[in-house]
Amino acid sequence: MSWIREGELTIIERFCANIIKAGPMPKHVAFIMDGNRRYAQKCHVERQQGHSQGFDKLAQTLRWCLNLGIREVTVYAFSIENFKRSKEEVDGLMDLARQKFSRLLEEQESLKKHGVCIRVLGDLPLLPLDIQELIAQAVLATKNYNNDVSESLLDKCLYTSNSPDPDLLIRTSGEVRLSDFLLWQTSHSCLVFQSVLWPEYSFWNLCEAILRFQMNYSALQKARDSYMEERRRQQMERDQAYVAKKLQQEGFASHGDTRRRRTLLQKCTAMREERIQGFLQALEHKRADFFERLCTVSA
Ligand code: IPE
Ligand code: IPE
Ligand code: MG
Image (cartoon, rainbow, N blue to C red):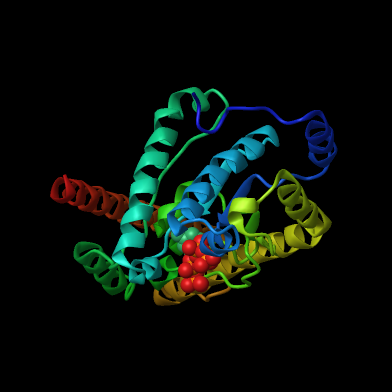
């Protein structure tokens, strides 16, 4: 039996889903699933039971998202800080994660038909040494090419670079902090904090969060667009300053010779793209090597 696709929406849920879908929908939703232990305490059940129900709630929430046409979901299931909890709790959580996520991955093939793709990522406790080295090399290289370093390069260096930034981030249990989750990627997301404990999360809570996203949609879009425009403007300004310096070195007046300036500008952009691609490929290789070694060690 499928973990995430069992059951459909009720008639009333489907009716409301259709109304909500008439408005702008978030394409990518991130969840900080918080409140499992408080739920266990409230219901007088074992802590592990609270966590287990939390994982099952994730399955149910993914189904709602699928029904609402949300194709990308990122969840915070465990943080580095959570390793400080008792060994018993950490082991219990790891067992649950292994069980539930492997079930999810088994369903990957059938979900692909719905355009759903699953990636399970973990946070790394330390930056792997050779990636640190690579960054050090890149920093040295930027002595000559400091125009290469930009916010968009930083985006491309992150594990999340294959996904668009979340449009909506939801944290349950009334806590109003991000606890280190996707800090960079959510700077222009709609943040919704809800008081419900994660295992009690309902379809209606999700609808409420999406409605809040829709109410703020135009402000969010405007902020995101103007941020992207500002990035482009800054890059153009830096490139133009670089070209003006080059022209001066070649003995041209910095404002003169439009054709030469245009050629230099194109060349400068193309060369930067090439350097960045090279750097990103090297980063990708180092990362793949690191994960391969990690898997060999833990196998
Ligand atoms: C979130 O619930 C799940 C994990 C952190 C693994 P908590 O375990 O943080 O539960 P509360 O917030 O203490 O109730
Ligand atoms: C938050 O964990 C991360 C997850 C929900 C996985 P906590 O609930 O322990 O967060 P803090 O430490 O209280 O912020
Ligand atoms: Mg918590």
